[in-house]
Image 1: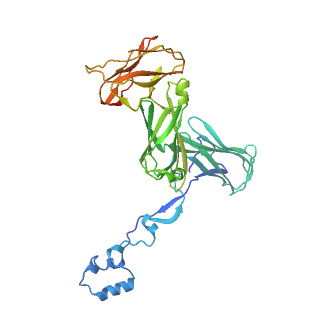
Image 2: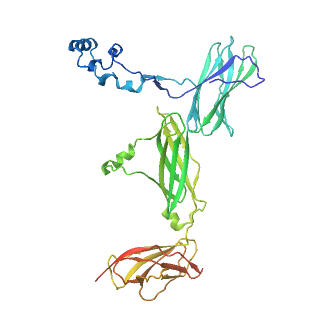
Image 3: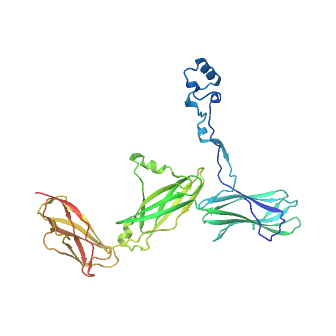
Length: 440
C-alpha cells in the first residue's frame, strides 16, 4: 500500500513505512481447459462411429491411447476438482482490495532503515483517522524502539474494526535520532475508502395486534456472503419471532437442525435474501404499562462470512414502525356454548379490560340494530341494555349476555356495542362470530 508525506516536509529520511494488508488468501483459479482426445486432432469426431471403419484400426488406437473413443469421454476429468478450474494453490492478495463496513482491517506495517546509519530511540505511532474521530492503534512512547540498524526494520501488526463508511487514513509516524543525532519526525499517510457490503431494506405492516417486519438484504460485494446470523433485537415492550417456511422435517430432528443450521448464501454482485419477523407487544407491557407511542421496533444484528471464512458484522439503526392506535378498553369473547338450541336462551361470556392508567366507565352494553332492513336472528333475551360499573386502571370485568336464536343453521352474532356513559363515547361493535343453531 503506497503512502505519501505531507507537503513541505523534509524529503530525506532514514526511515520509511511500508504497509501490507493482511487478509485470508483466495483460491487460484485458471481458465477451464477443454479436454480433448488426441485422436480428434487427426480425424473427424464421427470417424469412430462409422461402421465402415475396420475393427483393427479401433483396436490399434485403443491399444496405443488406452482410452474409450466414444463421446462420453470427450471431456475427461481425471480429478473432480478439474471441473472447478482450481489448481489447489492459494494466492495472497495482489492488491490492497476493497474494505467493507463491518470487517476487521488488519495490516502488517514495516518501518525500514534504508540509510547507512543507525536510527535510535524510535517512537512509533499508528492511528486511523475518519471524518468523525481518530483511533490510536499503536504508541511506543513509553517504550521506544532502541535502535533500527542500517538495512534493518521493525515490524508490527495493527487491527481495527471498521464501523464508519467513507474515506479513512492510516497515519504512521516515527520520531527518531538519525546518524547526526538530529531528532527527526516522519509522518506517512495511507488512504483507503470503506464501502457498504450490503444494503438492508425494511417494510413494516400492521395486521390487527400483530406487526410484521420484512427485511431484504442485498449483497454489494464481489464475493458470496454466508449469513451466520440475522437476528432482530426488539425494543422494550416488544417480542420478536422469525417466520420461516415449513420444510416438513421430522420433529425428532428439529433441535439438531436448529443447532447445525447451514448458513444462508447471498450471492455476489446483487444477490438478495428476505427475512420475515412477527412482532408483538409483550403481555406484561400491553396490560400493565403505557406503551411508547414513538414506536421504535428494534434493530437487526447481522453477521456473515466470506468464501474462506473472513468474518463481518453489522448492526442497523433503530427501525420505526407505524404507531398503533391503542383503545382505552378491549372486549373479548371468553366462552360461547358448544350447543345452541333454537328459541332457547344461552349465555355468551365476555371480558372487558381497561388499557389505560385511569378508571373508565361505567358502561352500557347492547346489541345494535342491523343497518339493513333484515331482522336480527340472534338478539338479547330480556333487558335490552346491560350496565357495567366502572373498571379500575388496567383492571377487567367479566360479564354475560343472555341471548336467543330464532333461526336454524349457521348464524351470526353481530352488533355487540359498548358505550362509555361517563365520557359519552361509543366504541366500535365487536367483530361478528358464527354459531350453529340446532333443534332440540
